[in-house]
Length: 272
Image (cartoon, rainbow, N blue to C red; front, side, top):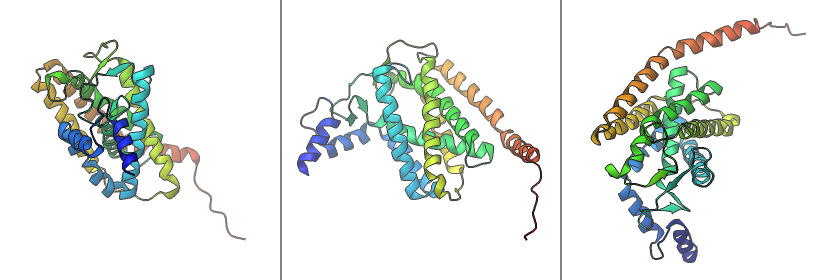
C-alpha cells in the first residue's frame, strides 16, 4: 500500500522525487486556498441535490474538466491550444501536466451556473436548462480567463499561456466555445445519470449566491490589478445577463403552456 501511495505521489508531482501525496495536497491547499474555499459548494450541493449526488457531481465534473484540459494542452480541443508552465511543479499536485486545482474548479462553476439556470427558467432539468447553464458558465469565464492569463500580476502566478493569444484580452474565442461545451456536458451527464432515480431538488439560491460570489471575486481581482477595461466589460456583460434572465421564467412558463395547448386536452376514457 505504501509503495502504491509513493508511486501515485510520483505521478502527481511533476519533477519531484521526494514529495509525498499528503505534503503535496497540503501545499496545494496552501497555494490555492481560494479554490478550496469555493468548494463550500459541496455543502450547498449536498443540501440541494443530496450528499451522494453532490459527491457524484464533483467526481463527474472533475473527470470531464480534466479530460478537456488534457486534450486542450495537447490537441487544442475544446479550449484552444494552451500550455501550463509547470512553474509550481513539485510544490502542488499535478495530474500529468495539469495542476490539480484547475479542473477542480469546474464542478463548482458548473453547479453555480446550473442553479442560476434553474432559478431563471423555473424548472429543474431539460435541454433549456442544460444550454443556459453552459452559456452562463462561459459568461463567468468572460472575466475569469482574462484575469487568470494575467496571473503573474496577482497571487495566482503565471501558470499557463495560450500558444496564440486571442482577441479578447488575450483569450481566444475557442476558449469560450469550450467552456459552453464543458458546462453543458457536466450538467447533461449529471441529469442523465440521475434521471432514473429522480427526486425533488432543493433550492438553487445557494448556488446562485455562489455564482455571483465567484463573479465578484474575479471582478475585484480585475480592479485590483488595474484592468479597468476588463472590469467595465465584465460588469456590462453581467448587467445585460441579469436583464435577460429576469423575464425568462415568465417566458419559459408561457412556452410550456403554449406547448401543452398545442398537444390538445387530455381525453379521459371511461373504464370498461
